[in-house]
Structures are given as C-alpha cells and as structure tokens.
Length: 267
Image 1 (cartoon, rainbow, N blue to C red):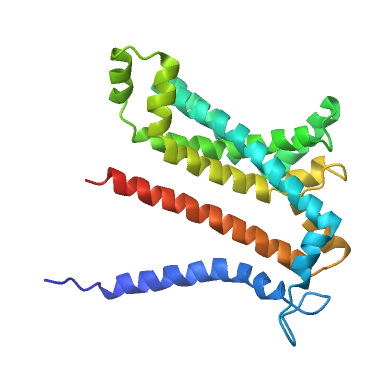
Image 2 (cartoon, rainbow, N blue to C red):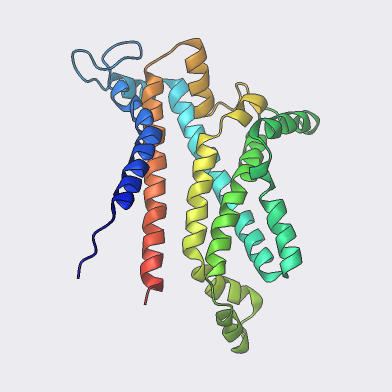
C-alpha cells in the first residue's frame, strides 16, 4: 500500500525550495560575470573569456594574497582543530556542571558580535605588537574557528560509547594510548567535519582583517575588499567564484563523511 504525500507536504517542500533558491541563486550571479569579456563587471557580451582567471594567476597582488590565505587558513585550521577537539573531550569527561561551563566559554566567540571582537583584537594587539602580523591573524582565526570544531566533535562524542575506553583501560592501555587508538578514531568524522568548517571560517573572514591588517598581511578577502573600493575589477568575480567553489567542495566533503558515518551506524 503506497502512501501519497498530502498537499501541505508538497507545499512545504515547494516553499523550502523557493527559500533555498532565494538564498543561494544570487551568489551564483558572479559565476557568469567572472567569464565576461569586458573590463568591468558585466555579463559576457560577445564571448566567454578566461582573461580574469589568468589575471588572478598572473597578478602578484591576487596570486600572493591567495597563497597567503591558503597558508593562514591551513595553520589556523590545524590549531583550531587541536584546541576544539581537546576542549570537547575535556568537557565530555567533566561532570555536567563543569562541562556546561566549558561549553559556554568555548561557544562565547559565536555569541560576541564580530565587530565587537574586531575592536577588541585591535585594542589588544596594539599593546602586544601583533597588528598586521601573521601571528595576530592566525590567533584571531583560531578563536573564531574553534567553536565550530568544538560543536562538531561534541556531537560525535555524544554518540561515542565510553565503554570502549573502559575496555581498553581494562586491557592495560595507558591514557594516551586510549586517546590515540580508541577515542580519536571513534570520533574521526566529527573531527574532520569540524576542521572543514574551521577552514571555511578562516578562509572567508574579513571584518577582523580590516581592523588588524594593512599591507604586510594581505589576504584574499582583504584584496577583494580593496578591489571593490578602489576599482571594480571583474577579477573580483573570478576570485568570488573560486571561493564559492572551494567552500562548496568543503561542504560536500563534510556531507559525504556524515553520510558514511550514518551508514556505518545504521543497523
């Protein structure tokens, strides 16, 4: 006996599709614009051209800012993943009261408005001498990205069976061995998902960069911002398309890992 979906279910699905289209489709406008054959932002007139993608590779400003962004995002992701994973495991092992306090502190960067955090970084970095330095940028990105790792790893730990650790300890495994061979492999999908989101956060960060960097540290979002203010170059559309593509690939990898995890856990 087949069950036909009711009309309200179809209406809800249509509404959800329209909302997603409203949120997603405007961002796709930059893709055809990036292939324009003109020297200003416009849709391709006579033919599609890759000249602005070549400019992205050949221009020292765009090329160097892209490489700097990749390097900073990679370092920030590694540090945020380590800190977020350690904090999540620590909160998981603590009691309900102390664990709740740790969770509140770990999620605090998500609560504070970005502009407030940027002002705080600016004032603090003046005294520490970290303005316009890679160290200062990495520290700011780590603070912003760690909560995402914390949430992802915490969700994985919620489904982790602590009896596996007890069994390993009963067989003589030391704490570090239990962590390395039992706990971390058991929550690997959550760690990888958190690292992906951490990379995306660091890759797209702009507001803090506007406050704590000038020219010594010139990342891709800052280059795009300056390009919009000084000269609306279609290369910006090519850069935006590249950022959308990288973000989309990261999200697809995260969804693939979550799907595989669900298949393994399903009976």
